[in-house]
Length: 464
Image 1 (cartoon, rainbow, N blue to C red):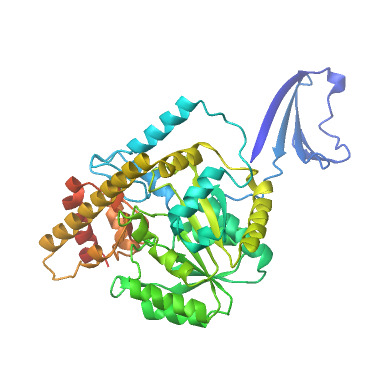
Image 2 (tube, rainbow, N blue to C red):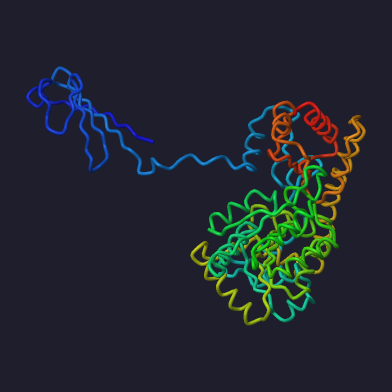
C-alpha cells in the first residue's frame, strides 16, 4: 500500500544537480537521482530536464504494510455472492435469517407494537447500566428458566445483557479465560462457524467432541459421550440448547439425561448456546427443556441467549449471558466480574432491542401474540421441510433414504453434501449455501422446493 506524489518546480540552471555527480546518500540512475530518507521511510526521485524543470516522486510505505488480507467470512460471504448473481432462479440458503413465503425479510407485528409503545412513552436514549436494562434482564432469565424455577426464586442466576448471542458468548469466554486459566472448552464437530473464532480471540483452548455421523446424517451419540468422558475433569462443554447449528440434529430427551450424567460425573461445566428458543419447535418451554434439565440437577452452568431469530431482532444485537451459581452471593460476585469485563469491551449495551424484549415478554397480551407469531414462523419452516422431503422422495428413484431431513429441527438442514457437491449447487443451480452442506430452510419457499430437490439430487448423484 503506497501513495505517490508528483510535483513540478521551476529551478534555475545553477540549482540543477549535475548528471555526472553522485551526491552523498544518493544513487545515480541515468539522468535521475534516487534518494532514501530513512527517518521518514520515503523514497524521493529527482529528475533533471534541461535544467529548468524538476520532477519529484514520493512513495510512502504504510506502517500497516504487514497487515494481510483477511479471508472472507464463510457465511456472510454467501450472501455477497448471492447478491452479485443475476440469475433469476438463484436461492440464498446461507444466512440463517427468517423469510416469508415470498422470501422477504419479516418484522414481527408484535415488534412493531412494542416500538409504538416506546414512541408513545417518549422514552429517552440515556446510557444503560453496564449490565443492561434491568427489566430485560429479569424477563430474559425468567423466559429461559421459568419464572417459578428455584434458581430464579433464590436469585442464583447472574444475568448480564450482551450484544446478542455472539457478544454474550464473548463475555463468557473472557470470564473463563480470567477465572479458569487453562480450562478447555469442548465444542461439537461441526458447530456454528463463529464459536471457534470467539474462543481463539479470547485465548481459551478448545477441542472438539464427535457429534455428526455422516453415515446416518444423524447424531453420533456414542462418540459424543466417549469424547466428553475423555476430556480433562472440569472442562466446559459447549452445548446447543435446541436446533443444533449447523446440523439441525438434537439429542432426544433420554439422550440429554445421559449427557447430563456424564457431565456431572466428570465435574464438567455445561455451557449452553440458546439461539432459537421458541423458534425451533414453536414452544418456548420445549426449546428450553435441555437447559432446565441441567439446572434442576443443581449444576452450575452458563447460558448465552439471542433474540435475533425468535423475535427477528437481527440488527438490534440483543441477548444475554446467564450464569447459574450455587448461591445468590456467588451470583452477585460473578455478575460484578462480568460487568468488569464488559466495561472496557463496549462500556454498556444498546437500549432499543432490550426495551422491545422487555415490552413483549413483560406484557401478557403482547407475549401471547409473540408466541402465536413464533408458532407461525416455526410452522412455515416445518412445512417447507416436509415439502422438500416429499419432493426428494418422489423424484429420486435411487432408493436413498432422505428421512433425516424430517428428523432434523429448526431453520437449518444438514444435507450431507460435500464441498464439491455444494459447489455444483452454486455453479450449476445458483443455490448459494455454505460449503459444509448446510442449508437454511428459512430462506426457502414452498414454491422453490421442487427446484431445490432437483439441484440436490443432481449434485448428490452426479458429483463425486
